[in-house]
Each structure stands twice: as C-alpha cells, then as structure tokens.
Image (spheres, rainbow, N blue to C red):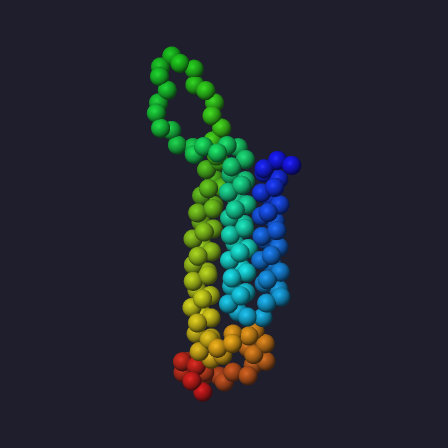
Amino acid sequence: MDAFRLLELLILVAVLVGFVGLLLRRNLFLKVLAMDVMGSAVVALFVLVAARSGLQSPILTARPAAGTGTAFVAVADPIPQAVILTAIVIGLSIQALLLVVITRLSRVDPSLDLGSFERGGLQRGSLEAGGRR
C-alpha cells in the first residue's frame, strides 16, 4: 500500500469519525467540534489531491540560463490550493459564528443539550433578556 492510499484511508476515517460524532452527540458544542473534524479532514483531502501531481510549489525562483534545456519539475496544482485557502476561511468563520450562537444559548440552558432545545421549553424572550428567566 503506497503512502497516498494510506493517507486517503486516514482522511476517510477522520471524516467518518466527525460524521458519527455529529449524529450521535447531543451536546451542541460537541456537534460543532465534530463539524470541525470533518472540515479539517476535507481540507486534508484537498491538500492530498493537490500534492498528487508534485510536492513543489509552482513558484519560479530563477530563470533558466539561455541555451540550456529546461528540466520538467513536477509541481503541485495551484487551483486546489486556492480552494483550500477559501475552505479554511469559510470553515473558520462558520465555526466562530456557531460558537457565538452556542455561547448565547448557554445563557439559557448551560447544559447545551439538544433535547432541551427540541422540546421547546424555552420562553419566547429568553434570548433577548440574556438568558434570565
């Protein structure tokens, strides 16, 4: 088994662990943590896909001398690298927004159990009042 197949398998395991955590955990903070694990695994998959063509960055450091043959060097694909950066920024902003919402919800119910929010036992204006009943 080559190194890329092993890394693909480990990334798949990380995605599945995050997905199982998202389905089985009742705590909202743990659900956000599971989503972060899944997002990190997807970013790792993009890094792996970008590295298949080569590991060197596609940046030219020096011009080849005139009259010499230019050797082909396998470089990493820059398009998945741009997608990786975008995914990291979007994932970080979504995680920050979810943590702010969870912090507000913890004022209402400190246990952050999903069941208490599904039952609808919260008063209508409890979030606006800062969680004081």
